[in-house]
Image (cartoon, rainbow, N blue to C red; front, side):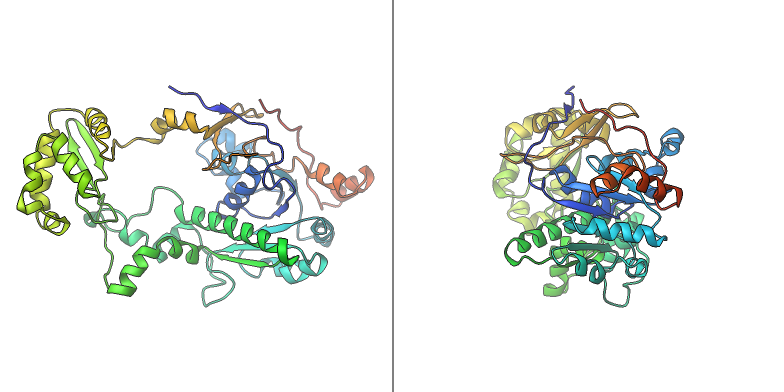
Length: 418
């Protein structure tokens, strides 16, 4: 079994000179700012005294009590946390002071919330014209749904994802993870990076309006086009590939299942030859993809009868040697020990007051000055005093803010990274 890599030190990372005031919570917003934190941005997570709701979203009573759920750990490393009561005018004034030196404000409240707090884009951009202000919401800042509450499940249902996921006999099915939240977060990260690049030659910041529904439909662009161009209505196909090629599906092998992703003529011939059925390549029933679809049951019988005598692992080995794309179905606890992840240093370890954490870092590598996980997700309000000192507040001013209920109680010392 491979072991995760320890966190890599980073210097001169891509966003090392970028400061983000992060008002996000739950997943869509924090996942977006997480991408920047991994690449060196100074992300100051501004939380209520209760903290991001995700801190307590866990089956572990202990971690919920400590406000450090695995879900929170996963998307908040490298960030600094400060607590503010934004209902107080002094807290709003404090944010405006911080905005003067910020590059980005990022929030995922429902449209209108930040305006009621006096922290909307128009107000803050007057203080800092170079400010990029990213708002992530279910439906964006226009249209009849703009003020409607939205979470991942609602967007999965509305977007069409559930209507094409699962087996027809079982009815619509959600994806096994918060796919629309993550699509929204990653889209926001790309949008903000785009605005940052544009600022390099305009000198101006701008408002970035990210709709989770829009972002999801962008990811469904092929399915949308199939309807708008050909009037074809998508439906559930279970484990069949989106290509609709019948050899890209789940098949029974000896004692288990194997997923084939056979999409080309060359792969099709190699599949049948490796299974000892080279004769079927010339069978008129399988002469092209249309014929194979019409005779799917007969083709499936040939494939599964050819694999019945050996385990899925055996056939993955044999077929991979023949350059036929395939895999067994791995669980999460299996894939995290895969040697491919070790080779890519995807999993990194960091020490924290809650023990050593093994976390996934960014899904890409850079040849120069790549980012990574440097510090664990912060304790609630851990960096409040630190951020205020950097902004010019002295000890007495900080204590006065705390006594007046503007900032939260001091947190413990930050953890060391190994």
